[in-house]
Length: 306
Image (tube, rainbow, N blue to C red; front, side, top):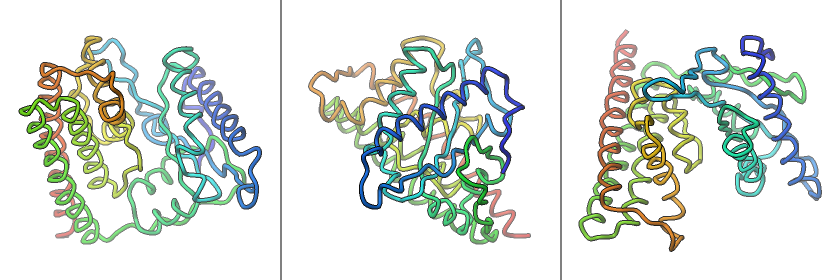
């Protein structure tokens, strides 16, 4: 695996160094008093993947959709229990968000996922495209040792088609079912419930696309993160959420917050007008996801015929 980031501008190289420092600092604080098996808690690798690793990132805040590629990072840890986001990584996530949104120490948003070495190697052994792409294009920002990841074992064309089709045929109807529930909620005046169900629609749509295209989706309810991963796969997704005005960006944020606040906060408010706007965007997302997934399945069908 490569270990150089010389293709990135100097400012981005410094940012990534800072991100690695933050991850180690917060992980160290959480595990410093660990006992038993957790005393051996270690970060084995920190890998940059996605557009910044490939060299095709987008940084166009003045463009029509103001799209900006995030840093995508895979953290590989020594034990499965260390992947628990709430227990081990919540503070790191909060600090990275604060560094970008408030302190402005980072100029690029950061998304990270955490897996054990066993999980990553198992994904490679089962031909999960996501892990294969990470192994192929990823750049090691940190490695505890020089152990290579397992050798990927790609699926046969027939296996790839069957897997993608199963994920799509299960995931897409599941997502759109939640959208129907959201519309029912609006008709009955259950606006907070509608916001939550729209969030679930979006989460499931992005997960459906990721699973269909890569046979992997992270265990994460953050639709901004899922959106980033999905948009990195197909640029047709870029324009689904307009971002030319503050109100449009705020609406996506309100939908993102609905996962928790619409259920648990008495202060969360959303109007029928806002839900109507979100509903139009969710419908468009569903249309684009359906198209991207069916195109992918058609591509796999063609490969399976050869």
